[in-house]
Length: 457
Image (cartoon, rainbow, N blue to C red; front, side, top):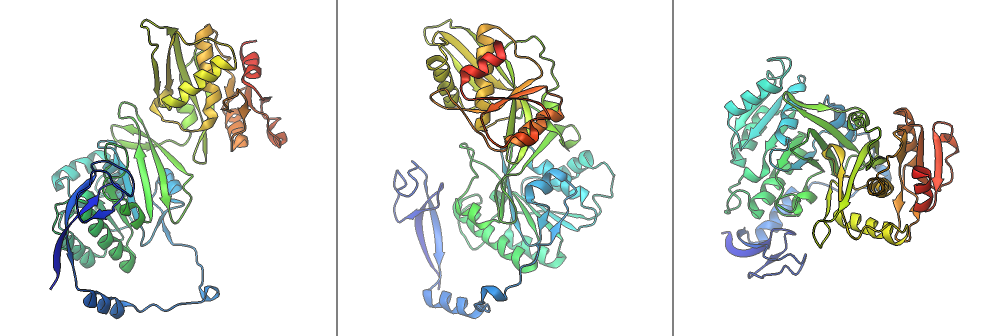
C-alpha cells in the first residue's frame, strides 16, 4: 500500500524539506516553502515496475543513425523562426507570458491556420462558447480553419489523455498547465506537485504517441514561469511571449530549445483581428519624423540574431527637487545611472543637478549592450539642445573608462542601416569591416569624445 507523507517544497527551485524553513538553502529565496502531500510507493514495487518497462539496450554511438527531425510548418514565419524551422513531432513546447499579453490568441490563431492538421484544443480557463467567439474574431477564412479543431474544456488530466488517445490528434494544446490536475497527486491544481506530475504525464504521452504538444503557462510576479523550476527542465522548448500591453508590439523569445537555436526572435503587432507578423520591425519603429528634435538617437540594435533600428529618446531638464529624478522605460535603470556617471566623469558634462528621462520607442525592452552609445548620445543631445542628424545611427558598448567597446554582429547592423537609407553609422574600432565599408559612410571611434565630436562638432 502506498504511503502518504507531508513535505515542504520550494516554489522557486523545487527543493524539498521535511519541515518549513524561512529561507531556502538551495536558491536563497525567502518564504517560498509550501506544504505538499506526497504519496510514495514501496521501493520494491517501484524497482519491479522499472525493470519491467525497460526495453532499451545500450548502443554504440557509431551505430546510431542521425536523421533530420521531421518538422510541422506552423504557417507563421515568426513562430517557425523561433522554433528553429517548425514544430518537431513528439516535442513538448511551453509558451509563457503575462496575463492578457496574447498567449492564447497566438496559439489559437496558429491552430486555425493549420487546416491540414487535426488539433485537440484543451482549455481549462475558458468555455467552449468563449473559444468559439474568439475563433470567429481571429479566423479570416470562415469555418475552414475550425473544421479540423476539436475543443475540450476539462481540467482532469486522466480524462484529457483518454480522449487524446482515442482521437489521436496531430497537435494538442493545453491551456493552461496551471489549471490541470491529476489523481496521482492530492494537492490543488496549480501547486508544485500538480504542475510537475501533469507535465511529466503530458511529456510521456507526447513521446510515446509522437504528438507535439503546445502548453501555455503563467508567470509569477518576478517574471519567471510559475511552478517548479523542474517544469522548464521537463519540456523541450520554452518560449517567452512578452511586451507592454499599452503598446501594439509583442516579442516571442526562445529561452530553451532542444531542436534549434535560442538566438532567434519573433515580433508581432497586436490588432483587433489578432496578431500580425512583423517582417521588418525597423520600418515600423522609425515611422516618426524627428528632424530638428533634440534628445533622439537611432540605435542599431540586435535582439537574438535579428538586427533592427529603434529610436532612443531622452529628456534632460533642471531638477525641481533636491534629489534629481532618474527614469528609464525599456532600458535598465542601473545601467543608465552608470552611463550618466561615465558621461560626467569621462566627458566632463555635469548632470548631477539634472532630471534624466529615457525611453525606448515602441514599448520594446532592449538588453543589447550596443545601445549604450545611442543612450548617452541622446542624453547629451537633450542636455545641450542640439539635434542629431537624421541620417546617422549608432552602435557601441560604453566602458567605465569612456572607451567604446566592440559589439557582436556589427556587419548585420551596418547592412540593416544601409538598407533603411541611413547615410552614416558610428561604430567601435574593429577589424574586418572592409566588406561593408562601401555600403554606408562608416566612422569608427574609440572613445565617447570622438563620437561626440562627430555628432555635434
